[in-house]
Length: 359
Image 1 (tube, rainbow, N blue to C red):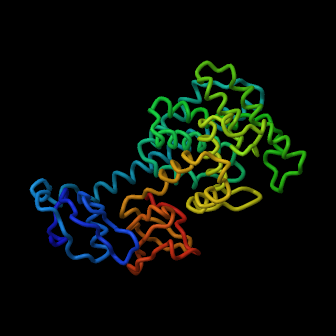
Image 2: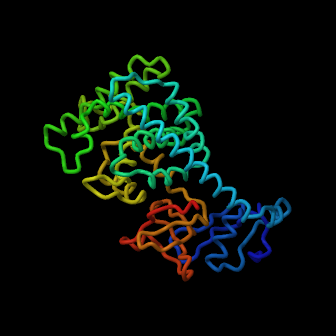
Image 3: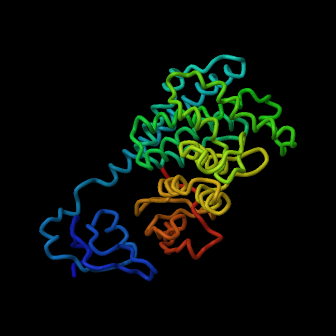
């Protein structure tokens, strides 16, 4: 047994560690990291069993200045926000030019969104920042960019290489370009759509495909994915009602990204849900409609939070993540910053994470 205050990084835990939890907070054979030290102290665990031979390979506890690390991360977040808003204004101008009949300039589009995709592929927490920017009156522009960024991140999570993830991101950004051909009175309507208006909206994948089908910079399968991004595996989607084997997995990547951002954004006719509420809703209501592997990749992308991640709860309390339950990843164990109380969100159904605190 080694006291937590004396343990060194790299030392290997000899048996599962529990702390009034159904599942171990640290599993046997896990090398100790900064995150593990944080969680052990949070649960007031004084000593742990460590394999003798691992101690010789461990490294001193104090190796980096955590405050300097936090400042660096905050600066990166600010840089992302500035670049996002700059790209948003450029994209809005391009979208308005499509409304006027201009063709898509893929070179301009790539210059706008690839730098953002690179940042999201480097740091997935930027996805949470995206949800703070969207406003109902400018929703379509934010939605196009965000769908592309999220699609790129999901692709990367699925093991797709960098170049193909970027292609997937470009396709996601262009998936709703056909909305530029829908008259604004329908596209920006603040009330629920009539059946006739809904049918017009459902033509936008056809318009999108018409606008991108001759772009040589897009791979053929990306063009199909754009056309199919509202199709569902059970045949309930549109515009063709394709199902199962006739729906590309690439289409489903855009579909999941599109659905997630739409549900997590404020709209004229309904308020947004929190990211973790959206994940739970997608799991419940879209089962059988969306590819399970793609949905799970998105869940892993957003819920695999490092120990110590600062979050805001739906009651506006700030907390830090202590433990992720792999059977209920959207509801980790957290510690409230205000009074140090430990809360198991899997047992507090009325409470969930509303935001990741990135600044």
